[in-house]
Length: 241
Image (cartoon, rainbow, N blue to C red; front, side, top):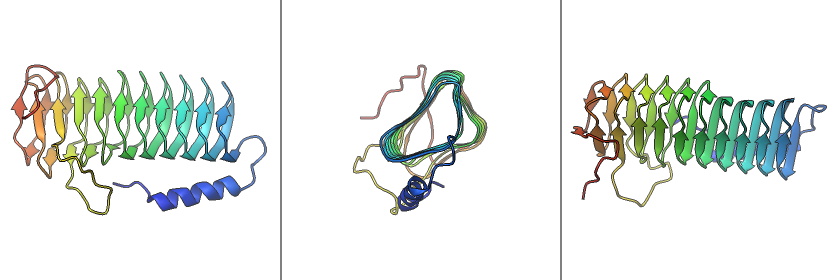
């Protein structure tokens, strides 16, 4: 995982919040939310305690908060969207260069675009139809559900479930061995990996620890190592007792 350590993210955010704003382009706050108005262009939006909302059609170079979510409304655009504690949501047709969160979910609306990676430590990732992600999708804990989406890179997790519903992953799929330096979950259940009908995994599927793996006969997958798949005839795979 390439997510920056929590302390580094907090330190950077505090430094940005203390810095003076540049004209009307940049908005920095310690307390309170920030709103980028519809149809306008902005530079950096930074808050320590508060959420960030980017209204429809607005363009923002960077959005960063420590405690708060980031909402990018329909057809709005942001460069790097980063939060420590909070969710990140992209509306229909919205776009981002990259998405990064420590504790919080990511939801990508219909036809949303992310040019590079979606990286989370503790949180789920869910897409609607038509989403395109140009890099990797990765987390440590939390479900990854790709619904009719396309990922140019890899999909990676440690303890999370992965469901591909008519989705395409150009790279591989990997469930990594837990690293004690990361937050660990007391939940002992196995990650559940479902490759549904119409899904494609172009690269290798590697499982570094035990998982429940289900592959639909109509899915196309590459080489698998570590776990043997069970074939399913519906996206709702049964769970082991």
